[in-house]
Every structure is written in structure tokens, then in C-alpha cells.
Length: 326
Length: 263
Ligand SMILES: Nc1ncnc2c1ncn2[C@@H]1O[C@H](COP(=O)(O)OP(=O)(O)OP(=O)(O)O)[C@@H](O)[C@H]1O
Ligand SMILES: [Mg+2]
Image (cartoon, rainbow over all chains, first blue to last red; front, side, top):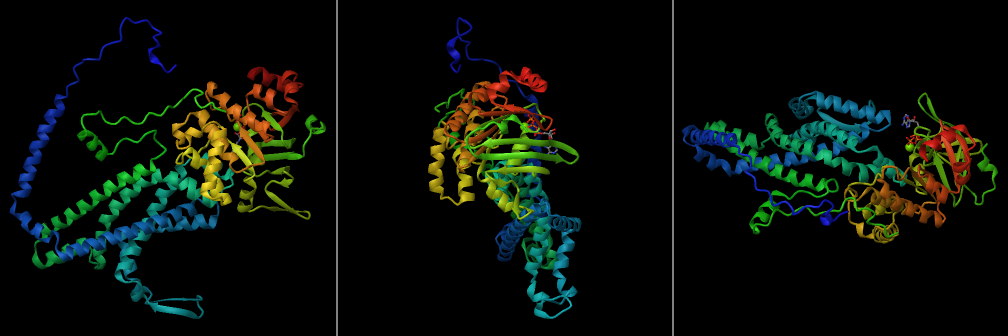
């Protein structure tokens, strides 16, 4: 069956290689020209407009307060995403639990944190000290065992982290829940039938498969978080944007500093986008018969002589009775 | 009571069902099932779609709770513990322990797609029984060998044919060293030319003395390998007996009608 040249139909000769004129795309060429012209005009407008002050941009790009703000931004992004992811998984599992207390609690949490603006939550955490000057552990209306001033307990970085992380957890919970629900019922059934507990089933079988659905929106959330951290400037935490603000409020070089800051954001989101690509690939294993080559692999293949791009490894799908060694 | 329980078949009872009832909401799916599966037996279950065959298998494996009647596996109640006159519901954890002894093979294979064939087999022994990975792998390879797929250890399910996937699924269930295997239409999702390989593996298992309950439309297999056969319809056992008797000389009109359609 798998030898096509057994020649069932008698043909005098095999058809020759096809020689055909490929479809022309004149529209594409015209469009490319138009876009190239527009791009040149834009570049010209950007680089020859003195207001942009590209020398100032360059001067501040690696300024120590800017790079310090950059580090704070990165820390905030990473930590609040970790908080969001861990909290999100926890909330999602609670939400799907048959226990009404757990699912109700998760629902309430998500309702509150998704229903109010992040900016308000940030300011709220920062002003917690004004609401409750001290935080204490003890029996309600009874004796206190331990207490501490709220402002010592929640410095501004922690307030920022709480504001961003707790809010993110509510969004991640919905993403994770969608992921978990996308996994076929038969998977947990098979896992339970093998004697695996609900916890093991979630950890080893369901979540790894849910990842494929969870990762792409999580990447978007991370990129969005990177930029949302700039909101933290309202509670006077000196992250990247606030660092820029501090400088231009002194020097009035507003536009160039906004550009400096934007260049950094752009750079970081690009790095994240690349990271996301590889993480997605990792979690796609097993789902495709063969993964397409990465851009780097493609470029490498291009330079290693003109071999046609590496064909995906051929797996023999049907193999009719091919494994019948029993 | 059915003729099956009256016959004196050898072996001690592995599964015993008396008046087992199961409803989903208002709909009663099992309306009092009586049967007895002896150790070492291949017990075939046939019947039209919707007759409750899968539901009954799922009850045996604690995947569904029964609403009435009595159901025991190897002398122990399913889903409950008896203390004096009282029944106590089992906790999730206790149910999981009971399931370890019962292997289940599904119509749609349900292999874990993010794991290779070998990883699929190794997972439960390592996670549930705390076996060492090295030991589990060694046994896993032996099992793959046994189902004729030693060369596919590192393939993902999506790279395997249906028949190969189902044989991996059987190996996966066997890795837990079950005393009872449940097969829910293991060959129904397969191309006809792949059915034979899976049935061969099941035939070997039967020869080695595994107790098996097989929901199937493969009447040839039932006739050749089966020790007992039950025809279910509408949530009740209509007819039971030795496969050759029931298949060649059905007593009930409903059985005759069903067999005339599938044979
Ligand atoms: N989770 C459920 N909720 C409600 N009804 C269900 C559920 N599972 C099964 N049923 C119903 O129970 C009846 C028996 O289903 P079951 O899957 O046991 O039939 P079956 O004999 O295995 O059929 P088939 O040969 O098609 O697999 C069907 O009418 C089905 O609609
Ligand atoms: Mg069924």
C-alpha cells in the first residue's frame, strides 16, 4: 500500500516537474512602495525635528536614576506576575471546587478585585495606614498578641506589589479557569481511574495541559503588567516612568525623557515577546506531530547551504498493523 | 435472578451486583442490575447504545456513586465502608486507593497527550505507589514490549495510531498491577484493520488469568474468549449465560432483535 510506484494505472511516463508562472502580486509591490515612502517621511520627521532632542534621549538612556527605575519596574513586574499566577491558580482551583465555601470565596474575591480600578486599589493599599494605623494579631474584640504600625509593615514597594499582584490574581484566575476547563474530561477520568488523587490529577495531568491555553494570555498579561507598573508612580514609588518624570520636572526636557522611557518599555516588551514564543513552544509538545522550526533555526538552515528547510521528521501515522509483534 | 448466578462457575466472586440502581437527576439509567463476575473470568457486556453499560462500569470503578442496591469488588463494598449496621461514605482519598486495584480502558484511549508512551505508563506507579522512577521505567518498558510497542516508548500519543494508543492505554492500566480490568468498548473508535492488534493483547491477558469485564460489539471476541455474557437494555439485564449460548440461541425477543442488527 505504501509503495506508490506499483503502477496500478498504466502511464507511459511520470508527469514532468511542473513549470508554471507563479501568480503575480502587483498590488503588494505598489503597497510596499507607498509604505516605504510614508516610513521615510516619518523617520525624517522624527530625526530632523529639534524638539525630539535625540542627544538628550541618548544622554539619559543609561542615566543611573533611569536604570534604577528600570530595575524597580522589572522587580515589580516579576513579583506581581508571580503573585498573580500563584494566586490565580489557587483561585481558579477554588472556584471549580465542589465545596461551596471555597468557590464562593473565590467568586467574591474576583468580583471585588476585577470590579474596581487598579489605580484605586494601589492608592488604597498605600493609604491603609490612614485607615488602620496599626495592624495586630489577636482575638477580635479580645486581647491582642502582636501589633505593628501599618506604615512600617507596608512600605510603598509592598503597597505597590499588593495593589498590582492581588488585582492580577483576579484576572489570572479567570485565565487559569478557562485553561482548566479546556482540558478534556476524559483526562481526569483516566487519571482518577489510575488511582491518582484530585490534587495529583490537577498538578500532573490537568494543569500541564491547561498551560497551552493559559500561556498566551499570560504573556499578554505580563506585557501589560510591565506597562501598568507605571501607575505606581502615583504613590511616589520611583520606577521607570517616575524616574523619567522626576528628571523632566527638573530640566523641562519632557519629550526626550518620555522617549527615553518609551524606548526602554519597547525594548522590554520585545524581550518578553521572544520569551513567550519559546515558552509556548515548550508547552505545545505532544500536541503537534512536529513543531515548526524556530526563526533562528530557519535562519541557520538558510546559511547552511541551500538545503530546503529541514522537513519535519516523518512519523508514520497509520502504520497498518505495523506494530503487531504480540 | 439471572441464570448466571445459578450456574456453578469456578472462582470466587470478584464483582457482585445486586439490584444496582443509578439515576442522573430524574432519569434512572440503571434499574436494578444483578450479576456476578468470578475471578479469572472474561465477562462480556453487550447492549444497545444508552442501555447503561458505560455507567455500570463507571460505578464499579467508583467514578459514579450508586443510588441503591449492593455492589462489591473483591468482597469490599464500592464507595462505602460498613461498620456494624451503618454505611459510611468513603473519603476521596480512600476511593482513590480502591481504584488502584481496578484498571480501566476507555473507548477514546484518554492517554495523557503531554507525555510520551513510556511516561504515560510510569506516571501512576511513581505518583501513586511511590515506586522509584528507574524501577517504574523498567517495568514500563517490559509492558510496552508485551503489547508490542517497545519501539514507541518515546513517541507522544499524537504520533501513534489509534490501535497503538489503545495498547499503550492497556499497558498503562496494567502498570498498577490491577486485579480487575474494565474495558469500555476498547475497539469501537478504531479502524477495522487496527482492531485485531488490540484484541490480541486482550486475548493474551485473558489467557494469563486476568479478570476482565468487557463492554464490546466484537461478538467474535465474546464468543471465542468470553466466559460469560450479559445483554443489557434500558438499564436492566435482559439475558445472560455462556456467550456461545446467548449468541447462537438467544431466548428473549429483545436480544434477538439486537443481535440481528450487530451480527
Ligand atoms: N453524566 C450524565 N448525566 C446525565 N445523563 C447521563 C450521564 N451519563 C450518561 N447518561 C445517560 O445515561 C444513559 C446510559 O448511558 P451509558 O453511557 O451508560 O450508555 P452505554 O450503554 O454505554 O451506551 P453506548 O453504547 O452509546 O456507550 C444514557 O441515556 C445517557 O444519556
Ligand atoms: Mg458507553
